[in-house]
Image 1 (cartoon, rainbow, N blue to C red):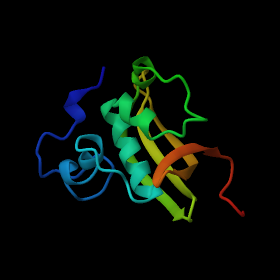
Image 2: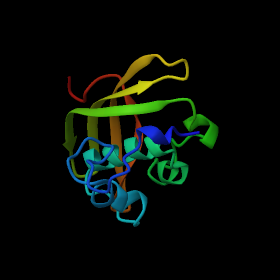
Image 3: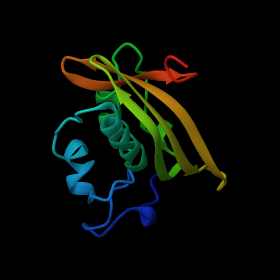
Length: 139
């Protein structure tokens, strides 16, 4: 279960994704109000927030249907996400990429980080997470 002591309780506090806007006007509009991110970086930020808040339905909704695993609520437990840092991002017409570092506390209480390059595809005018890459495209 999520540790609610690390969550923002003040509506004016910055969003969990690291942007200065409050949650409700940043990632909250995607997770709560049904809006859809306009680019891969915004989608990545909202997906990080969904992991932090354990929003399984949003993660599945924003995952490419051909690469989405059989994700369950149990997959989201045991990780306490702390901070997101976007290294770089780029959006093309149908594909985009985001390199990020996500800091977390594992289920043993150890500080860790996930450094990933993610590929996103546009499907029916909406960006979705496609897969992890081993290197930035073209490098």
